[in-house]
Image (cartoon, rainbow, N blue to C red; front, side):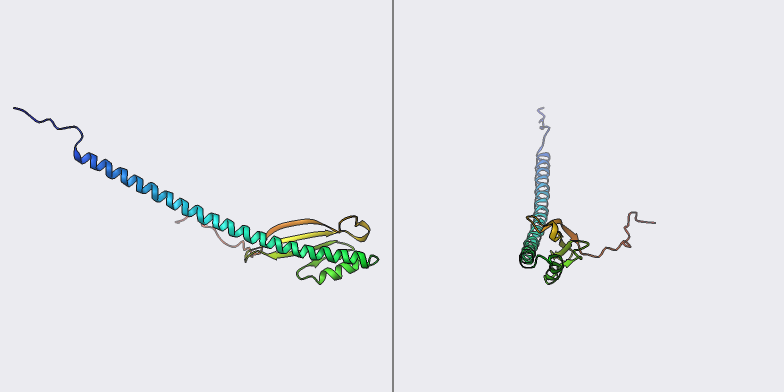
Length: 161
C-alpha cells in the first residue's frame, strides 16, 4: 500500500510562527512608541527649563544694566562720595542687596525662575580708588534652589520587616 508521507512542517506550526512574529513586532512597536513618548516628554521638560533659565538671564541682565548705569552716573556726578552714594543708589533698585562698600563691596540679587529655583547674581563692586575701566566684577551667576530642604524625610530602602 501506498502510505502518504506527511511533511515535517505542517500548517499548524507555520501559523504559530506567524503569530509569534506578529506578537514580536507589536511588542517592539509598543516599546518604541513608549520610548519615543518618554523622550518627547523629557525634551519638553528640558526646553521649558531652558526657557525659564534664559528668561531669568534676560531679566538679570536688565537689572545688571540698571546697576551699571547707576554706577556710571554716581562715578561721573559724585566721585568724592562714590562708595556711600553707590550703597544708597543700589538699595533703590528692586531686589538688590548691598553690603557696606567700605568693608564688603558686594551687591547681590536673585531672579525667580520657577517655584523651586532662582538665578543668583553676585557682584563685587570696586571701591572708588580701584575703579579702572569697569565698575564691578560678576563673582557668581548660578541657579540656586529656593525650595526648603528638610533632612527629616526618610527613604524606604528595605521593605518588609
